Image (cartoon, rainbow, N blue to C red; front, side):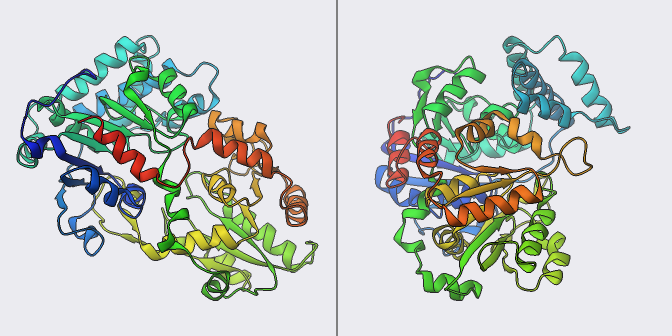
Length: 479
């Protein structure tokens, strides 16, 4: 489907209806709990949500004027999986040269098991050693889409598209495999598709998108250049730079709080500085309990130059069970367990069904605004803290030799290598370096401020204010 394809319908409703595809809890936060829906309803006559989350998730959150169509959840067919996997591995192979993150993902995706799927994965690895060009990636994609030809799910999607009649279908995430049949249905109905590039690391280190789209919305000039680099068939004219609604709640009045409310909410001493450690999930941040213990022991043994509050925010993508022993060992640690609700248990990607509450956005914003120091293992939260001009430390104790989970390798991922080289964060590879960085950052909070602001401009191409309005305008221009 080319970028110039237009929808055949001529009705006013067709021309003015936005189909908004929410794939997961983060998309819910970015496009439902931000200002986006309000702006979209001003630009379009109608907004229809195609939701991979249960319909009940939107109760009391959206206007009654907005229709929610719940996407059915079904297992991916073996044929679809095979060609999707071939497409993704071919993409990684085609872009592996000089890119450590992609090389690392190639290793991670390899399956040495004895199951049928493991054996098929190894077959794909063998086949794509030579057959991984853009031409072959296109063939794998066409075969993936062809596998939907007789799909009952696609028939449901086609009927929904026919009845709801969106003039543009906007995907808030480009990667989930379960959106591929909806892309296929839109292609068949000649409905324009547009995708938002979900996160800052998605292009430079991840596998192929779920499908081809007519238009793409990206954060910045940097992300546009990455999209053109990794997707050769995409033209500059198909890309709009819009920033990201991920951080827009930080400038929305409804999520603001006072410092007093922050102290009360987390039972903190208002006279002390506050250190916040924000966790990743266990799949990429397995060493987080070690970092929390290191900081807590430094506080307990007076290794820090000043007394502090220590607040830990666990990952919203998982339950906090793995930190229970740390909480019991150090009773003075204050904890923020993100208020995200598990909306569904029967899903291939359970984490995607965790949905944030407005209260959690309030909690997150007050932490970022009033904590004095942010510590995390190379996550997007580094950007969150920088947006509030806070110093950031990234502890990475693990390597290939010391027996810990090797998180130092993330420093060589293209998106984070740029962060490290900029000097916007302090990197701590040992407990001693972490404690030294904490003391320095608390004493010199503005030492990295200039380079942090430069990095923010590079990564987020638009001001946070009016981000949703800009996205809605970009989508309206496609109609």
